[in-house]
Image (cartoon, rainbow over all chains, first blue to last red):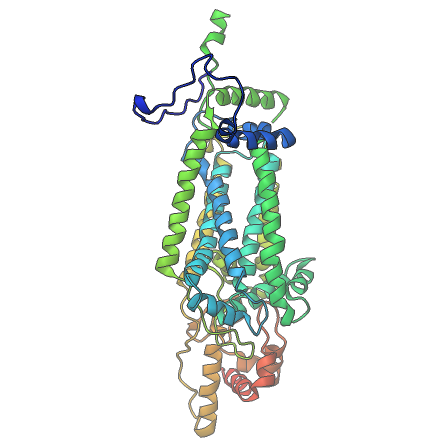
Length: 268
Length: 244
């Protein structure tokens, strides 16, 4: 098996550190040597207590099958978009006030006054569009290439839950700026939910925090948007990734497996 | 897939995997490049398109069109395509619910071992049809005209105070975005709400006011408008009552 070799930095030979000649040192390790090895020592110390290196090696040095191409980056790109949403969302939450009287003002402050405020808010707003598109593209790739079939059925189901969670995020986030557009779109959206079968009316009441759109509706949407659903998404991405690493990513469906030549029948 | 097909798949997959490359650094490099592209796209979108804000939410007026984020257009348009009122619940939740259930259970009813798209004609066709339908509905939603203008002449014989009232009512109806879901004469969208062109001859004004206060979902209620600005509400009711 070929070993990974790190390229040697282009240092002139005269500057390269020379190993000590045998017999010159007295065999003791001085503090200078310890300092040089500090990084390794710390990692060793942590690994001795957690055994993380095994899991890391399992995750990083697993093989991806032959034929893996750029379409296989869509899932990780969607996850990256989620991380970007999480980071920009934290900064927005530092300024946001989820009360009907102050919400609009706080967003106005972020947009017009805060340092880079409009930029970060724009990233969050357009990041949601990018994330939805990436999730759909990732799903399309999985669907058309039959990647949801045995043994990856469970991962497909988790993925569908993640899709619904993503849509929930954009629905609950749409209300938060609390301008006319978001307010009335949310009223209609919640009313639409209410026409659903069986759980429809209960879902609407839960979202509105009562039969009418009231003072606590906004904080409820805020809590769902920044605690409940992101937590679920993060946990489900973890499960999704674990299954990907355990079962392996699929190969494109038209790639045929050729057994090793040394194992063909004529030579066995 | 039966047991033999499962084992065959796992065998072939093991061979493909053994011929592949390690995740780190090969796949990680591709993923990182893609992540960088995603970040650049988000930043460019943010700089170019910005994050504009509309006027502050005001529950007492309904002067804004309820318009969702663009990737919900296809759900919103589903309401318009399916018109009869008894089917509206089907459009709002029925169809999406069924689609969700079909999506969840996909690996359990599609159990054939075949994975190549060109050898799974039903699945591929269904997928392409779904994408085309969603794209078409999104296009419909994006190209729907502004529902904030009503272009029509007052009925003949309307003079003085009555004409002023009629014009005020027309303005309220336009600002409230009624046309997003209703058709008045040549204006507005054909559904999901019923036509209002002749609503005055179908319902008396008292019934119109009652419906505005306590509408059938998904229409928003005008109860707050009736309480806070009764003149506006009255103008709206009399405008609608004169549509014959």
